[in-house]
Image (cartoon, rainbow, N blue to C red):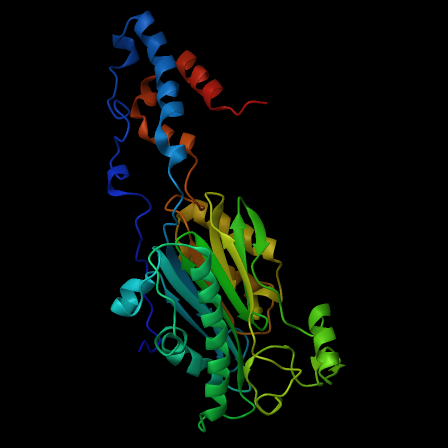
Length: 380
């Protein structure tokens, strides 16, 4: 069991060991004599050969693999009580040991925004690992394939429903207590997000916000239609005049008996994507963040922070402080998950990576640097 444990900043290697060395291409790290000690012919030759090495290097052929590291921050905000909870595990297989065999790297994150008291969210924090991985028949596989991810989605779906029933069975938890839930899982290059409620996951793809979840609120047309079909109603923007979300775990005072259709449900919606070098980081946050800022605003803040100090924990705090400055009325919880070791996001481009490796660039003449720039500029 993991009662609130977090595995912090465990870095999963990005490449095979042979590519961790600075010299994966013969001669790349062999610094040429300073240009002033070379003949004009030799200097000219060096100016041409360096970009040639860059172009022919095998970096582009390497398959992207996320280098996972994360940071989180939670704050009570202007509320009297803290009802948010979260869980953050950067190395899931290392955390679970023999319980899990799955494609690497692998990670698990969850945010839970409670209402009607903190009990439901606190329960999910305490029991998330048991519900999602220990009690469920979580699929086992070391290689990525379509059937594995179909099975993962089914397992997570069942875990949400099991958690909902567990909250009903726990007599210590009020039937009016509930929580939204968003879980993000990474297996190899696949990112899977499961959401029930109005927490949100936003992916930064080359600086552009890509929403990986939809807010389950009465204002969402698809949810409005579903609620009406189930006999529910919306009053002043609230489900049955009471709740601001349309999906949640718990809240059994508003749900129909098991097996009956209910306007309020615990079923998660899923979104999945294959991570590439363009994907820099993922933001997961409770609605205290999203009530006062857009997804793009949040991405811009985190991206600037990573370029400035490269600390996801600090970025999470800065994002929460921005929400407080914008006068949010709710608790604040943020997780920032980075997919690359470089400042600001994903794996650097092959050109950028090799520019950093070729130390002799510092001693090239102006003419050589000009030639280098021409080699690196994309064709118009």
